[in-house]
Length: 456
Image 1: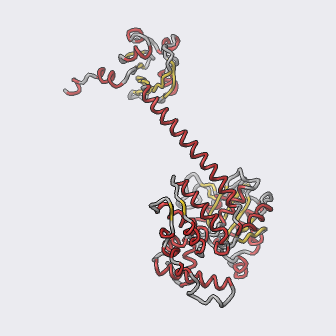
Image 2: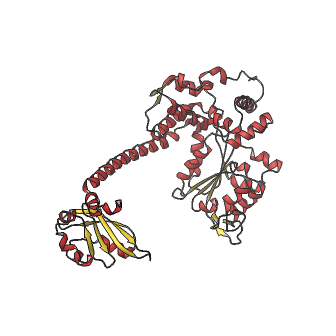
Image 3: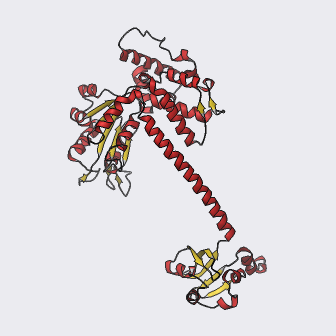
């Protein structure tokens, strides 16, 4: 009973100014009252007429219904009415049980809604332009700032000398010193800058998955493989740069395959027999002593000499204290832009940050600055806002062992050992230790095993 009482014509007239319905033969069979005003034509004139005829008479200019019949899909388009106004028209197909178009319903978007959308669009475009300008400015600043890192001056000088030559480069140094950043800098300033920069951490992916990630696989190559197959990261890096971080974690089996790929410039995906040509520059990084690994038989000598045509050792942040101020400014600007904030770190806090030895190196400093930017309630970050382990200098002195014994590397290793042991006492998992020290989980797990003989 309720449905019989509903006046659908009245509802349509209230909801739409100019709704029109066209039947399967392309004839106008219904229009709402507002159609007359929008199109400057009487309803009785258009009812029963074909959309082709109305289009020729410029009443529909052009006809959205005709476009719907041609495409069989919903259409949104602009057309001009007889009054000279441009309208945004929606055309919606209504199908019968046989899947054929029975009717096409069309209606325009109200002008006030269009104006509102245009206003919002203009605001978004203005905001986007503002962000783009800020990002460009920051990128230029950061690029200039990074090359001003005095402690890394030798690193940048070497990169500038080799950037145009397609040689393999090995970055060495402790975890978190910025090997990935320098690898990206080398790529961005090389002839391959327009190509992809593909990064993979050899220690972060299980051995049984690493091969398929690097070399890809053909469909059905193994149980659980995608039906479409998968392109490997080496092939993805074609015409660009492949960056293998933690190369010392690469299993011997894959060292052989990587060596062949470097020698022949071809790869064979898992489950396939056809060679695929690849052209990429290889950059690798490690915090391990690869020469020692070669002597121990855990790293292939021929691959070692292939990947370190040029070796660049990046000193830890504690040996580059002159870089600390630049990096603090770098990361403060970076996270202010990312989180739309305007925080700054006062001079006293900067000095205290620079006196901290940063066992997790640049990665730990970056994580610390991000937390300070996010967690600080005031716009100015003071020494009181710093983490306790940094604020209390007694917690990061060398008093836990005798600094007068051994070489500098031996003393630094002993200091690192004390830091790892303290972190293990405070946290229960290698993930939490890694987070606190700003190092990767595989690195944390390896150091915990080395210094405490525990598996966390």
